[in-house]
Length: 277
Image (tube, rainbow, N blue to C red; front, side):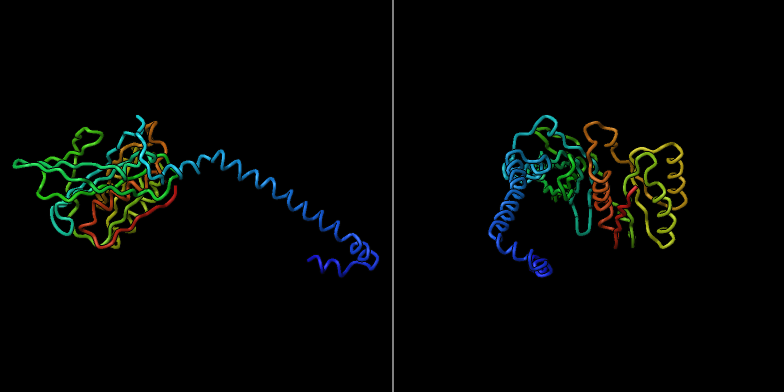
C-alpha cells in the first residue's frame, strides 16, 4: 500500500520522503508501539482482575472441590422415574436443579432402595445436562441401577436421607412424542395450542409443562387433554423462588430431561421444541 501511494506522488514529494525516510519509519514504528501499549495494559488488568465471567468459568472447571456454602447445599428435586422392564430394567432416573458452583456432578450421592424384604444402597451416577456456565443454577440427571424392585426410594444428601417420590415410566408404545418448554403465566401457550392440533393429526403425542398459568389457560389445557389427549405436568415454580431466578433458557433443559426420562422406554422418536417466547 505504501509503495502504491509513493509511486503516484509528484517527484519533489518523493524526493522529500526519500530524504527523510529514516525519520518517517521511526515515527511509524513508535506509533505502532504506542498503539499496542493500551492493549497490553488491558490484558495485564484482566490478568490481575479477571472479569466475573472468566472467574466463573475458572471456578466451574477447577479440579479442587471447595467446601459448600449454605446456599450451595440445596439440591432441588424435580422428578424421578422407575423402569420395571426393558433395556433400563430396575433403573431409576432422577432430575435435579442445583447451584452451578457446588459441582454436585462430582460429588457422591447415595440412593437407598427398600421393599418389604430388604434394602440396598447404590451410588448414583450424576451428569450435568446444562452445557454452559452462564447461569447460577444447572440441571443434573442422576441414574442408578437397582438389583430388585422398589417400594420406597431415598437419597442421601449432606448426610441426610430424604424420601423421593418416584413414578413409573410411561410404557404406552408411541411413534413420536413432542416435548415443549415450560409455560410461565402466558408465555409460549400459542406454541402449545398449535402443536396440540398439528402433531396429534399425524399421530404424535404432546408433552407440555406448566410453572404457573392463569385460570383461563388452565381450563384450555384441560380441554386439550380431553380432546387431543396431550399430557400436561406441573413443574416446580423456580421463577417464583428468589433463589432460583437464574435457571437457563426458562427451564428448557429441566423439562427436556424430565420428558426424556419419562418416555425413553416407550417411544421411537422424541422431538424437543425449544421455541422462544
